[in-house]
Image (cartoon, rainbow, N blue to C red; front, side, top):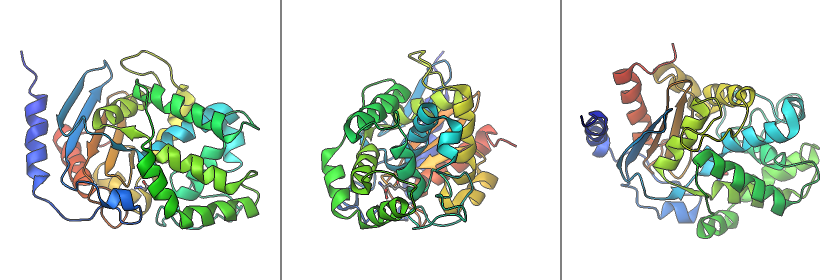
Length: 306
Ligand code: DON
Protein backbone atom coordinates (compact mmCIF):
# COMPACT_ATOMS: atom_id res chain seq x y z
CA UNK A 1 0.00 0.00 0.00
CA UNK A 2 1.27 3.52 -0.84
CA UNK A 3 2.15 5.59 2.22
CA UNK A 4 -0.22 8.53 2.95
CA UNK A 5 2.73 10.55 4.34
CA UNK A 6 3.81 12.28 1.06
CA UNK A 7 0.23 13.46 0.43
CA UNK A 8 0.02 14.81 3.96
CA UNK A 9 3.37 16.62 3.57
CA UNK A 10 2.31 18.09 0.20
CA UNK A 11 -0.90 19.36 1.78
CA UNK A 12 1.01 21.01 4.65
CA UNK A 13 3.40 22.66 2.14
CA UNK A 14 0.42 24.00 0.17
CA UNK A 15 -1.03 25.50 3.33
CA UNK A 16 2.04 27.71 3.91
CA UNK A 17 3.03 28.31 0.28
CA UNK A 18 1.35 31.72 -0.05
CA UNK A 19 3.08 33.14 3.04
CA UNK A 20 5.74 35.45 1.61
CA UNK A 21 6.48 37.33 4.82
CA UNK A 22 10.05 37.74 6.02
CA UNK A 23 13.17 38.29 3.90
CA UNK A 24 16.30 36.44 2.82
CA UNK A 25 19.43 37.17 4.87
CA UNK A 26 20.77 40.50 3.64
CA UNK A 27 24.15 40.58 5.41
CA UNK A 28 25.58 37.83 3.17
CA UNK A 29 25.28 39.12 -0.44
CA UNK A 30 25.13 35.65 -2.00
CA UNK A 31 22.24 34.62 0.29
CA UNK A 32 20.29 37.81 -0.38
CA UNK A 33 20.26 36.73 -4.05
CA UNK A 34 18.80 33.25 -3.31
CA UNK A 35 15.40 32.23 -4.75
CA UNK A 36 13.08 33.11 -1.82
CA UNK A 37 10.24 30.88 -3.04
CA UNK A 38 11.99 27.54 -2.54
CA UNK A 39 10.00 25.29 -0.25
CA UNK A 40 10.76 21.76 0.93
CA UNK A 41 10.21 19.29 3.71
CA UNK A 42 11.86 15.95 4.40
CA UNK A 43 11.16 13.51 7.20
CA UNK A 44 13.58 10.67 7.98
CA UNK A 45 12.50 7.78 10.15
CA UNK A 46 14.93 5.82 12.29
CA UNK A 47 14.72 2.81 9.98
CA UNK A 48 16.12 4.99 7.18
CA UNK A 49 12.94 5.81 5.26
CA UNK A 50 12.88 9.40 3.91
CA UNK A 51 9.70 11.17 2.80
CA UNK A 52 10.65 14.28 0.83
CA UNK A 53 8.33 16.79 -0.84
CA UNK A 54 8.93 20.07 -2.76
CA UNK A 55 12.47 21.33 -3.42
CA UNK A 56 13.99 18.63 -1.22
CA UNK A 57 16.91 17.90 -3.55
CA UNK A 58 17.91 21.56 -4.03
CA UNK A 59 21.26 22.34 -2.37
CA UNK A 60 21.71 25.34 -0.09
CA UNK A 61 24.29 26.24 2.56
CA UNK A 62 23.89 24.67 5.98
CA UNK A 63 24.86 27.87 7.90
CA UNK A 64 24.04 27.70 11.61
CA UNK A 65 22.59 24.21 11.33
CA UNK A 66 26.24 23.14 11.23
CA UNK A 67 26.66 24.39 14.81
CA UNK A 68 25.18 21.44 16.77
CA UNK A 69 27.11 18.98 14.59
CA UNK A 70 30.44 20.81 14.98
CA UNK A 71 29.71 21.03 18.73
CA UNK A 72 29.23 17.24 18.72
CA UNK A 73 32.63 16.81 17.06
CA UNK A 74 34.29 19.18 19.55
CA UNK A 75 32.79 17.24 22.50
CA UNK A 76 34.03 14.01 20.95
CA UNK A 77 37.54 15.35 20.30
CA UNK A 78 38.14 17.39 23.48
CA UNK A 79 35.80 15.79 26.03
CA UNK A 80 32.96 17.50 27.93
CA UNK A 81 35.22 19.34 30.38
CA UNK A 82 37.54 20.53 27.63
CA UNK A 83 34.61 22.11 25.80
CA UNK A 84 32.62 23.35 28.84
CA UNK A 85 35.72 25.13 30.01
CA UNK A 86 35.48 27.33 26.89
CA UNK A 87 31.73 27.48 26.01
CA UNK A 88 28.74 27.55 28.36
CA UNK A 89 25.29 25.98 27.92
CA UNK A 90 23.01 28.82 29.03
CA UNK A 91 20.56 30.53 26.66
CA UNK A 92 21.70 34.10 26.04
CA UNK A 93 18.31 35.65 25.20
CA UNK A 94 20.22 37.74 22.67
CA UNK A 95 20.42 37.60 18.86
CA UNK A 96 22.68 34.95 17.31
CA UNK A 97 25.41 37.42 16.36
CA UNK A 98 25.63 39.26 19.68
CA UNK A 99 29.14 40.28 20.70
CA UNK A 100 28.89 38.87 24.22
CA UNK A 101 30.52 36.76 26.95
CA UNK A 102 28.99 35.44 30.18
CA UNK A 103 30.23 36.46 33.64
CA UNK A 104 32.85 33.68 33.52
CA UNK A 105 34.32 35.08 30.30
CA UNK A 106 32.93 32.31 28.03
CA UNK A 107 30.43 32.53 25.16
CA UNK A 108 26.95 31.72 26.56
CA UNK A 109 26.36 28.63 24.40
CA UNK A 110 27.56 26.91 21.21
CA UNK A 111 24.50 27.90 19.12
CA UNK A 112 25.21 31.65 19.00
CA UNK A 113 28.08 32.74 16.76
CA UNK A 114 30.54 33.44 19.61
CA UNK A 115 30.08 29.91 20.97
CA UNK A 116 30.05 28.30 17.53
CA UNK A 117 33.29 30.02 16.48
CA UNK A 118 34.82 28.69 19.71
CA UNK A 119 33.38 25.18 19.19
CA UNK A 120 34.80 25.15 15.66
CA UNK A 121 38.24 25.90 17.14
CA UNK A 122 37.88 22.85 19.42
CA UNK A 123 37.32 20.32 16.60
CA UNK A 124 40.31 18.03 16.12
CA UNK A 125 43.19 17.19 18.42
CA UNK A 126 44.87 20.05 20.31
CA UNK A 127 47.38 21.78 18.05
CA UNK A 128 45.76 20.62 14.82
CA UNK A 129 46.09 23.25 12.07
CA UNK A 130 43.18 24.87 10.21
CA UNK A 131 43.40 22.52 7.18
CA UNK A 132 43.29 19.25 9.10
CA UNK A 133 40.60 20.68 11.38
CA UNK A 134 38.47 21.52 8.39
CA UNK A 135 38.96 18.02 6.98
CA UNK A 136 37.63 16.66 10.28
CA UNK A 137 34.63 19.05 10.11
CA UNK A 138 33.77 17.96 6.56
CA UNK A 139 34.26 14.26 7.33
CA UNK A 140 32.20 14.54 10.52
CA UNK A 141 29.28 16.43 8.99
CA UNK A 142 29.38 14.11 5.97
CA UNK A 143 29.10 11.11 8.33
CA UNK A 144 26.02 12.73 9.89
CA UNK A 145 24.55 13.22 6.39
CA UNK A 146 25.60 9.80 5.09
CA UNK A 147 27.22 11.25 1.95
CA UNK A 148 30.24 13.46 1.15
CA UNK A 149 29.44 17.17 1.53
CA UNK A 150 31.28 20.00 -0.23
CA UNK A 151 31.70 23.75 0.24
CA UNK A 152 29.91 26.44 -1.79
CA UNK A 153 33.00 28.57 -2.41
CA UNK A 154 30.93 31.51 -3.73
CA UNK A 155 28.91 31.74 -0.50
CA UNK A 156 32.09 31.34 1.56
CA UNK A 157 33.84 34.16 -0.31
CA UNK A 158 30.72 36.32 -0.15
CA UNK A 159 30.32 35.90 3.60
CA UNK A 160 34.03 36.62 4.23
CA UNK A 161 33.68 40.01 2.50
CA UNK A 162 31.12 41.07 5.13
CA UNK A 163 32.27 39.01 8.15
CA UNK A 164 33.21 42.05 10.24
CA UNK A 165 30.94 41.08 13.08
CA UNK A 166 32.25 37.50 13.34
CA UNK A 167 35.81 38.80 13.05
CA UNK A 168 35.17 41.22 15.90
CA UNK A 169 33.70 38.38 17.98
CA UNK A 170 36.77 36.22 17.25
CA UNK A 171 39.19 39.01 18.17
CA UNK A 172 37.26 39.49 21.42
CA UNK A 173 37.51 35.72 22.08
CA UNK A 174 41.26 35.83 21.40
CA UNK A 175 41.69 38.84 23.68
CA UNK A 176 39.89 36.99 26.51
CA UNK A 177 41.94 33.80 25.95
CA UNK A 178 38.94 31.72 24.82
CA UNK A 179 40.61 31.34 21.43
CA UNK A 180 44.29 30.58 21.56
CA UNK A 181 45.06 30.77 17.85
CA UNK A 182 44.76 33.17 14.92
CA UNK A 183 41.18 34.55 15.11
CA UNK A 184 41.02 35.25 11.37
CA UNK A 185 41.88 31.63 10.48
CA UNK A 186 39.25 30.39 12.94
CA UNK A 187 36.56 32.63 11.39
CA UNK A 188 37.56 31.37 7.93
CA UNK A 189 37.21 27.76 9.09
CA UNK A 190 33.88 28.47 10.80
CA UNK A 191 32.55 30.31 7.71
CA UNK A 192 33.60 27.42 5.47
CA UNK A 193 31.76 25.09 7.84
CA UNK A 194 28.65 27.27 7.42
CA UNK A 195 29.10 27.13 3.61
CA UNK A 196 28.76 23.35 3.32
CA UNK A 197 26.03 22.45 0.84
CA UNK A 198 23.12 20.27 1.94
CA UNK A 199 19.60 19.40 0.79
CA UNK A 200 16.50 19.08 2.97
CA UNK A 201 16.89 15.31 2.60
CA UNK A 202 20.49 15.48 3.91
CA UNK A 203 19.36 17.60 6.85
CA UNK A 204 16.51 15.21 7.70
CA UNK A 205 19.03 12.34 7.84
CA UNK A 206 21.46 14.43 9.93
CA UNK A 207 18.62 15.18 12.35
CA UNK A 208 17.58 11.52 12.31
CA UNK A 209 21.13 10.52 13.29
CA UNK A 210 20.73 12.70 16.39
CA UNK A 211 17.24 11.29 17.00
CA UNK A 212 18.74 7.79 16.64
CA UNK A 213 21.21 8.51 19.49
CA UNK A 214 24.21 8.98 17.18
CA UNK A 215 23.82 6.10 14.70
CA UNK A 216 23.06 7.00 11.07
CA UNK A 217 19.75 5.33 10.17
CA UNK A 218 20.93 4.36 6.67
CA UNK A 219 24.68 3.76 6.84
CA UNK A 220 24.51 2.20 10.32
CA UNK A 221 27.67 4.11 11.28
CA UNK A 222 27.98 5.34 14.86
CA UNK A 223 28.89 8.98 14.26
CA UNK A 224 29.08 10.18 17.88
CA UNK A 225 28.30 8.70 21.30
CA UNK A 226 24.90 8.72 23.03
CA UNK A 227 26.29 11.01 25.74
CA UNK A 228 27.39 13.55 23.11
CA UNK A 229 23.94 13.43 21.45
CA UNK A 230 22.24 14.04 24.80
CA UNK A 231 24.37 17.14 25.35
CA UNK A 232 23.78 18.41 21.80
CA UNK A 233 19.99 17.89 21.87
CA UNK A 234 19.79 19.58 25.28
CA UNK A 235 21.53 22.67 23.97
CA UNK A 236 19.41 22.65 20.80
CA UNK A 237 16.30 22.60 23.00
CA UNK A 238 17.31 25.59 25.10
CA UNK A 239 19.34 27.65 22.59
CA UNK A 240 18.81 26.34 19.04
CA UNK A 241 16.25 28.98 18.06
CA UNK A 242 18.18 31.83 19.71
CA UNK A 243 16.02 34.53 21.29
CA UNK A 244 12.90 32.72 20.02
CA UNK A 245 13.81 29.51 21.92
CA UNK A 246 11.08 29.95 24.55
CA UNK A 247 8.30 30.45 21.99
CA UNK A 248 9.63 27.49 20.03
CA UNK A 249 9.86 25.08 22.96
CA UNK A 250 6.37 25.94 24.19
CA UNK A 251 4.70 25.89 20.78
CA UNK A 252 6.64 23.18 18.90
CA UNK A 253 8.54 21.33 21.61
CA UNK A 254 11.18 19.63 19.44
CA UNK A 255 14.98 20.12 19.79
CA UNK A 256 15.81 22.25 16.75
CA UNK A 257 18.32 24.40 14.88
CA UNK A 258 17.85 27.02 12.20
CA UNK A 259 20.19 28.46 9.56
CA UNK A 260 20.16 31.81 7.71
CA UNK A 261 20.00 30.14 4.29
CA UNK A 262 16.49 29.00 5.29
CA UNK A 263 17.07 25.48 6.59
CA UNK A 264 15.50 24.26 9.84
CA UNK A 265 15.92 20.87 11.53
CA UNK A 266 14.12 19.14 14.37
CA UNK A 267 15.28 15.91 16.02
CA UNK A 268 12.77 14.05 18.17
CA UNK A 269 14.74 11.49 20.21
CA UNK A 270 13.84 7.88 19.44
CA UNK A 271 11.36 8.98 16.77
CA UNK A 272 12.24 11.06 13.74
CA UNK A 273 14.41 13.70 12.05
CA UNK A 274 12.66 16.53 10.19
CA UNK A 275 14.04 19.26 7.93
CA UNK A 276 12.42 22.17 6.13
CA UNK A 277 13.82 24.66 3.64
CA UNK A 278 12.36 28.10 2.92
CA UNK A 279 14.74 31.09 2.69
CA UNK A 280 12.63 34.00 4.00
CA UNK A 281 13.53 34.68 7.63
CA UNK A 282 11.85 36.30 10.61
CA UNK A 283 13.52 38.90 12.84
CA UNK A 284 15.34 36.17 14.81
CA UNK A 285 16.96 34.72 11.65
CA UNK A 286 14.64 31.67 11.63
CA UNK A 287 12.73 30.57 8.50
CA UNK A 288 9.16 31.97 8.57
CA UNK A 289 7.49 29.12 6.68
CA UNK A 290 9.82 26.59 8.34
CA UNK A 291 8.52 27.61 11.77
CA UNK A 292 4.91 27.38 10.49
CA UNK A 293 5.54 23.91 9.04
CA UNK A 294 6.98 22.66 12.32
CA UNK A 295 4.04 24.11 14.25
CA UNK A 296 1.71 22.09 12.01
CA UNK A 297 3.73 18.86 12.33
CA UNK A 298 3.94 19.22 16.09
CA UNK A 299 0.15 19.77 16.37
CA UNK A 300 -0.94 17.19 13.80
CA UNK A 301 1.38 14.41 14.91
CA UNK A 302 1.58 15.14 18.64
CA UNK A 303 5.34 15.68 18.42
CA UNK A 304 5.68 18.08 21.34
CA UNK A 305 8.05 16.49 23.88
CA UNK A 306 5.67 17.18 26.78
O1 DON B 1 27.96 33.32 11.09
C1 DON B 1 26.96 33.68 10.49
O2 DON B 1 26.42 34.76 10.70
C2 DON B 1 26.35 32.73 9.47
N1 DON B 1 27.39 32.02 8.79
C3 DON B 1 25.42 31.75 10.12
C4 DON B 1 24.33 32.42 10.93
C5 DON B 1 23.07 31.63 11.00
O3 DON B 1 22.82 30.75 10.22
C6 DON B 1 22.06 32.10 11.99
N2 DON B 1 20.89 31.28 12.01
N3 DON B 1 19.79 31.31 11.77
